[in-house]
Length: 248
Figure 1 (cartoon, helix red, strand yellow):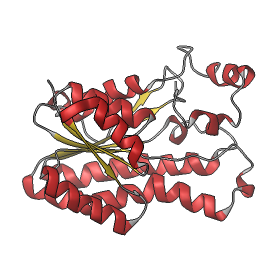
Figure 2 (tube, rainbow, N blue to C red):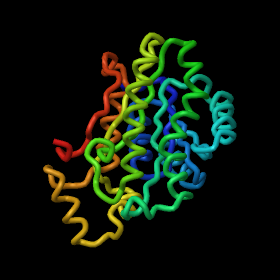
Figure 3 (cartoon, rainbow, N blue to C red):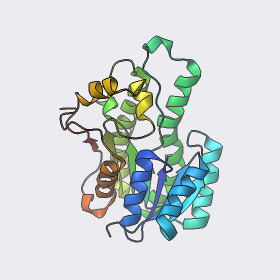
Figure 4 (cartoon, one colour):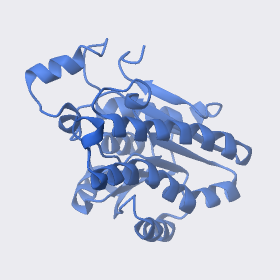
């Protein structure tokens, strides 16, 4: 029970990687706040986890929504020990100059601004308590970019840099900050990244992963448990590639 008695937030927890992390956290003893824009999806995951979880709705890219969410978390669960900034969106593969401005803004609001807004709400309490863990979900796209996904790649590169900077700044307060870099995963976002889900396109993606398979939410959950538990108490500022060797 590596997260026993810990209160953990997982944004985007209603599906995919977020749900995988929430499940593993609950198995390790954490009380999990499953946060998602889609409340019914969050409720479904929380119900699966039983008394170890609470579902809440939040639009991670909207300041007012995040502030309301933070107040509700404080009311229901008190102080937060672990914050997982997992919520993310992508865009379909296309030439970099053709992505619409509205979609560009959405990618950066959900993938980047969300981390800033969450930090603004939760970091002060972590600093005051002189403990806490933040885990940002970045991507191999921020390390080894795929063509035609330029603005998604850039947003995840931002996450990696923010993670390292946050780690350095918050270390004196006993707060650790790390990231995980998933490779293409069997989640609802996979089709978006591929453009279309066909055997040919899947084979093309798999050919870039030495271990020969897509990642799973469980893979990310296992890595997240390590980085958010006391087992990694000397680890901060790391962007861990959980990628089957893709970035080698």
